[in-house]
Image 1 (cartoon, chains in turn cyan, purple, brown, red):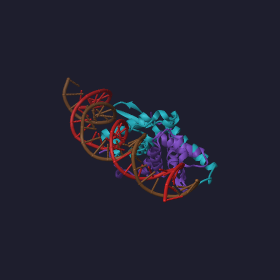
Image 2 (cartoon, rainbow over the protein chains, first blue to last red):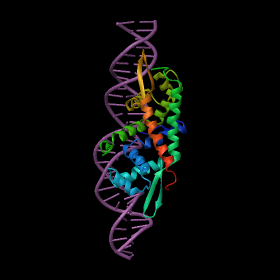
Image 3 (cartoon, chains in turn orange, blue, cyan, yellow):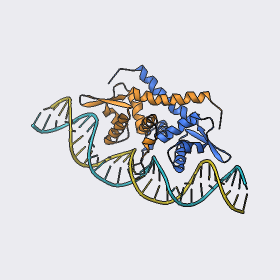
Image 4 (tube, rainbow over the protein chains, first blue to last red):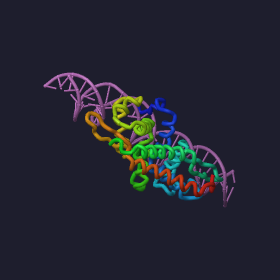
Length: 110
Length: 110
DNA sequence: TATTTATATTGCAATATTACGATATACAAT
DNA sequence: ATTGTATATCGTAATATTGCAATATAAATA
């Protein structure tokens, strides 16, 4: 137990859950907002921006990267992180899909 | 440790994280998709629809409700769950905001 | 080469999540 | 009143997440 029963759900459901889960922490929301705000995106800035230690921030960046929400490329000494559009579009699409269908069938229950 | 440092982030960041976290499980994505698909939304159906036990589904429903993504009203013997629009719109807005700003400043780095 | 700077990894303690059997509650129907 | 049906809660085991100090790595610079 304690393990999510991943194989009982569709690939799409698991993908969306991974994306959503990656954003299920305020630090990771803050990272996304910061990456959006600044033009240059160097990790050192992120560490200074957040109220968390360097290892902790590094871990959060790794999770966002694994989920496909950001990407990082080596830029000399430091690393340039930025938002990975495909990942973002996928989860954005989910919400738009729900919202659109909801508009169609409003006030049928509850 | 093990506890998220909620008070170091903005209210908005925490709110969005709570919403995203609630969707960070395939069962909860599946529940949202199912609620969207059917017109009547009775919990018993949800239990039969998912590959999880009744207590587990009940727990997932509770989390979605606490996050403000669904609402449930007593309907005689059973409970009518459906999507709670305000919660959904809030997180949808976050992704649209990112996507819109991203479009503006494309190809500046990475 | 030695030192500094930026980032990642390891190891670990505290806490949270996932899942489910057992049980409780609450209404419906007999 | 008793039984059945729908849902919630409790208790608990297995696993995952969060956070950080210590340490490792790797490039830049002196």
